Amino acid sequence: MMKLDILAIGAHPDDVELGCGGTVAKEVANGKKVGILDLTRGELGTRGTAETRDQEAADAAQILGVAVRENVAFADGFFVNDKAHQLEVIKMIRKYQPEIVLCNAIDDRHIDHRKGSQLVSNACFLSGLIKIETEINGKSQSSWRPKAVYHYIQWKDLKPDVVVDITGFMEQKMASVFAYKTQFYNPDSKEPETPISSKNFSDSIEYRARNTGRMVGVEHAEGYTVERFPAVESLFDLK
Image (cartoon, rainbow, N blue to C red; front, top):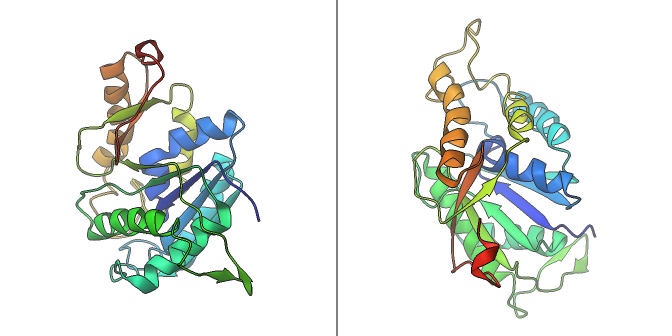
């Protein structure tokens, strides 16, 4: 069993990179053990294939320096927040015992993002109940509940409850995003246009991080919504 400090979860490969890639890169650089869990292979994506997405996800993971990346291969577009899916996510939470879970936006354009957000949130709670029994490779798992669940922000400009300064890690974040070569802006691509394949969208990754940073007096930042009040020892701990 590899214990993680942070488990970043996304409905699709590239959700983590887009939503919290800078935070992941920064925490890895700070010596934290970080992993990524993808819920689907993104097989319904207009551009590329599940196989190209697998390779792109592996390339992005290497760029970010994460300790592990797994995919539970739920049905893209059609997975639901029910007992069967919750149990699979619970197994992953108990396997890696993360202190913090990062997951999809609470509200977003893509239905999988909202579903993934609620599914992971529910699974994090249920994972702490000792009477829910799970096993991996024939071995029983102990209950585990992360200390905090933070939801990154995706297509919609949701108001963050907390932001992370990712100054100095924007280049690494962008490299991890553009590891998904089939998905994002490429003027030579013959694939159909999608909302995320436009130059405007690619540019928005940078200017959103810059604007979020501007609001807190840093160069670049990523925002999160929280499930409970964030607490500090002192007001002086806040930037």
